[in-house]
Amino acid sequence: MAEKKRQDELVERQRKIRQLKATGIQEKHILEWNFGVAEDNKDIQMAKRYVEQWKKVKAENLGLLLWGDVGTGKSFVAACIANALLDQGIPVLMMNFSKILNQMGVIL
Image (tube, rainbow, N blue to C red):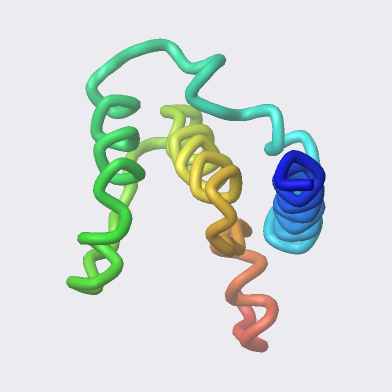
């Protein structure tokens, strides 16, 4: 009986994570961007620490700013963080800055 309950809880958790990913990631190819496929470098190590310390950074309202030229991996690092948090059942909404401005009604 306990095994059945544990199995049901696992199935429900997986369903919740699938739902969070479906609503939180706007571009579906980004679901494949994760720490498992990332090259280990200082940016990825920083991103992993951010995820590992999520409870603390959330409690202290600490954000993370990624900046750099086009093609330097900012979106990839952000997606790795987003997917790691989603895998823990933590809601995430990931979209690019132009979509955010568009939703706010800002014209560039």
